[in-house]
Image (tube, rainbow, N blue to C red):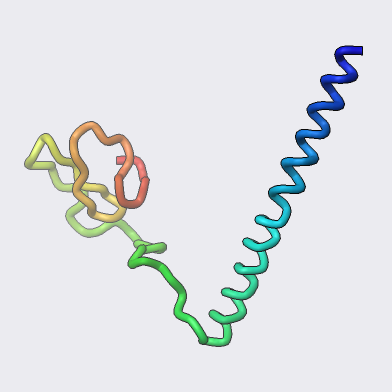
Length: 95
């Protein structure tokens, strides 16, 4: 009996959570569709915030010996990272 009540309560809570999130998800999808349409029609410019999506091959000289032991230069994007980082703070590639 307790297991059935527990299952019923969990089911009701999940249905309530779904009912609350569905309109939000619908709005996100509709906004994405609208932005894509506007972008394709050249009504808006694609927002990249200056991000580099394809940095290309590693920059020349990235394999040189580090002169400052407290800093590491990323071989993928050239960003100088503080010591102790295992991944680049800019492109998230392994150092």
